[in-house]
Image (tube, rainbow, N blue to C red):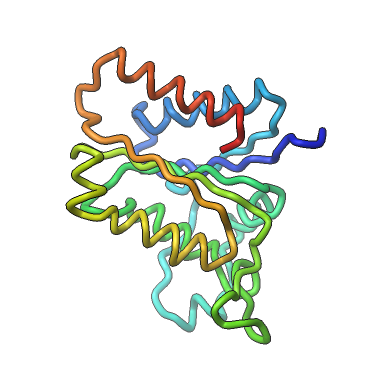
Length: 198
């Protein structure tokens, strides 16, 4: 790959794959922009993966990663930039996205089992990320009144903890009945972000 070109992994966290949604359109715009700029793009959809939910800390620490998610871990290792998209559901990411991240970000892959600084245990350094969250409420309300709690938690307690950074964020609110002109602005913005691999 040319110098300056990136290997990007798009993690499409919308749980409804049966119908097109805003997250799907924005991911496509990002992918189009990235590929037009010469970046390589892979995509994974957690809800389409076969995996059980974790039931205990011991299972997370010592259990085997489901075979269906081993290619996902390999894709993360190939990537130097991640785009994570999901709609806000009940104030947080959908359960399928949360369960997916819990399964993938295991000790020995995402964090060190032992022998490293416990404040910086991450094994996925050298990768940046962008998190896009869509929601029905106004984005400003989410950021100011709710203080973007779940987004900050993902950024700091998961992505930052495993060594990924910098992590940029985009929040798109009031998505119900979005006017065509606003949709086009959002789509164009994602295409620009894809071109810049941001």
